[in-house]
Image 1 (spheres, rainbow, N blue to C red):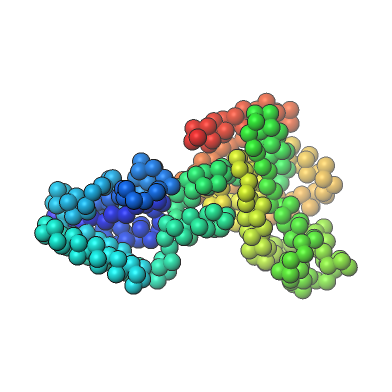
Image 2: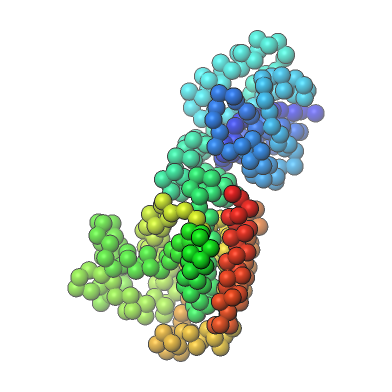
Length: 379
């Protein structure tokens, strides 16, 4: 049997590590992934945490086994009848370092060789230290690590537990989010309600940075000068009438707003601790459930109550119809989010029926169950 050892700290495991393991596993019969312990290093995650993260990240590879490793790698390889140690290198510095380690291993006269795998160009910048540096400043790390690792980093480094909340128009997202903040104060737990729609309002209204002025001008150029007020801000009512009547135009607006929204969202989350409610209507539609690691409350509401709530916003029957058609149905949202959880092997979907407007006790029960599961069990 052709067998190899690939060892690394995994503090945390990254897509760079995963790629090396995958390539090795495709060429050999068995790969032992060793999560190392270096007494000269200070780790963010415990050995158990690092091992569990690696196991979950690699559980799709049937011929890969993950275990802790200590001491000389060549000794471990010898004891497990492994003749090859695999090393991934990203640059000349990595190569020189691994060359020295290989020569030291050769002096032990155990017959263990080293095979070098060159990092793919698109992953050459990925490292555990880079991931932690980005996370420290609330940068996006979705291209660096799997979602379960991203979630662990947010919890460990930032004390952040991000939960999405979404649903159709009139489902009561904002009400439930505000209640969570209220229940958090009652329980002595920090809870922050971050509404993506309010961030959108700021971008189209009064943010002074040059890029947001450009966004407003671009919206006016594409959708017509009538959507821009004399002060440069966007008349969202007029813009809404245009885009909610034309799916293609709504898609164009979403693309214009996406990057500015993500930048402002990061700034909103930065420095906040505790439970962070990410309140957004289009989590499923725009594929941004990764922001909350696929941990989402999906609100259901019956047609009668939904229509009554939207009517109270002074929307006509035709406007209500267009608003509802601009989003996925409840069932489509549910299917999309469930598929993301399965695809990423991470996340949880809570279904909450908000048809009963006197159900604050039910909302508090949901809040308490999420706190117990997402925070109390992890601290």
